[in-house]
Image (tube, rainbow, N blue to C red; front, side, top):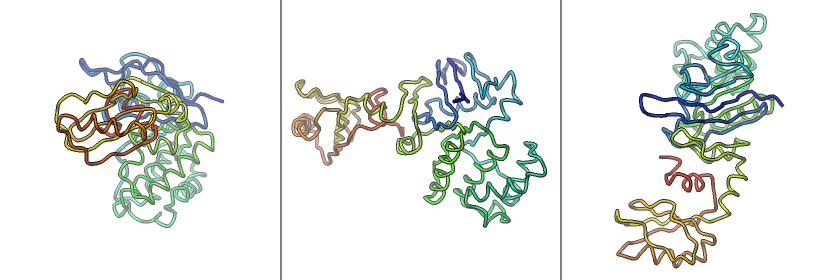
Length: 311
């Protein structure tokens, strides 16, 4: 199995701030790897270094064995990138956008027609090929943007928050396309702050915050690292004071305490709930809603950082 992306001790600084801090991970052919973290965690900066847009401050990157800065043409020939903003020509049709992308990436002229038809079919826009992009919905533009990134058949695809803000139909098409790419042997790096997307799509996940890789593994491995503890989410009228003291014999841990919400990790949520509730309501607090949740990637993130994935 070939390694199509390798990131080694990557550092990227802006003035005094480290946006990416000693980050290392790898993605193999046929793998969907999720880089999971909240907004501002360093995911987009990492993508920009991988594409050659931003130079690294330190560390190294290899795309299919090529350095994006030492061998940019070879690296970019192996790379497809879908950013958060769509890069399309609104006055052109869907087919014309793809024809132009083929010309820019030097797809042989004898293959252009079949390549464009194949991609339009794959993203579910074959019947809209001759319509101007300006008439498309946001989800349709996202799908076409993905097709543009695939015209030169890259072996590594970088997807930066590809499912944010898309309608259900577009989401289904994009998920099918991403899974199909992996089945065809492409490597996919997907950045997201959505736990559900990561669990649905990714074989392995790296959890990142403040530019650092905090944990890595399959979803099952990361969930197991929680020790199969439950999560109690208490909502109500809480003050800004310290988190309530929980009975030590419960072995409970306060993961996050904010006005209006308290998150507690505990071995048996149903058994511990009455005592956790009593402790939370001490000092005049009022609990209006309680939710018992099984361990998730979001639970792990809260445990590692003390804040929500969707901050």
